[in-house]
Image (cartoon, rainbow, N blue to C red; front, side):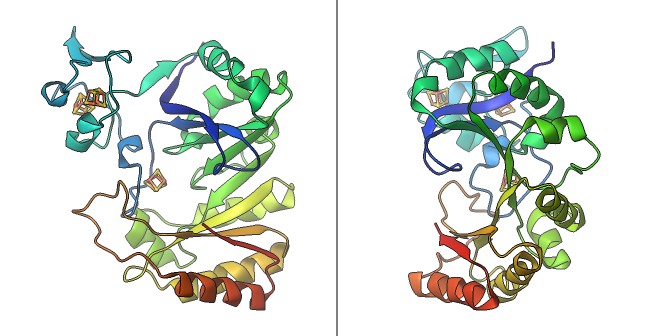
Length: 278
Ligand code: SF4
Ligand code: SF4
Ligand code: SF4
């Protein structure tokens, strides 16, 4: 049985899709977004042991060349994450489908669904397909939150196993997307069209970052795409916040409420029916 590499599980989240949801953050991402606010989900721990001495609670140790995390001792200070040079976390763990299901079982009575986020969750789609088969039996909705970089149209069994997808479109402009993430947006755009065609596209998300992106052009182009596909597709305009962002990569201002409202109005004027600011 294959295992999932998981950064953390948040039992209750109201910001990862509709209703009260359990959010599962997978470890590992193929983008390297300048503004990533969870950079510790990008890399794979190489067991270098550098974080052990920075743990104030003796919750970390190197045992047989493998990092071991003692959850009971951990106070959640995140010192280990801050010093890791590999964008990883010693708290990421491998879990079987059964272990994840056991974890969700404890809160199942209080949630409407599960959202798989990251990192980039579709990099582990084989594990997720197996997990979703079990989640189906629990009669809850299954959402994925993806950067859209993995071609979904080639894997029907995976696509059929979840209900809806929330897709990040970091920038409509290819050059800007490349600058921001290190990767092209070509597959992201194809995935958006594909998911819409099969009625699995729940939401497109984009982050508004002053001084880094041409936000007006971006919202303009994304809105035109939404109107072409289906004006009812939700557009979430996410206000950039510096929390967790690597300071050496980006020093940007937080967009004002006025800027966010202007962009929302622009999108609505183009014809988008569901635009949200968060
Ligand atoms: S989390 Fe980072 S610093 Fe700690 S052992 Fe893994 S790679 Fe090294
Ligand atoms: S968050 Fe990391 S450094 Fe802090 S107590 Fe837990 S394991 Fe140790
Ligand atoms: S896609 Fe998400 S997790 Fe990956 S680097 Fe970008 S912001 Fe971070």
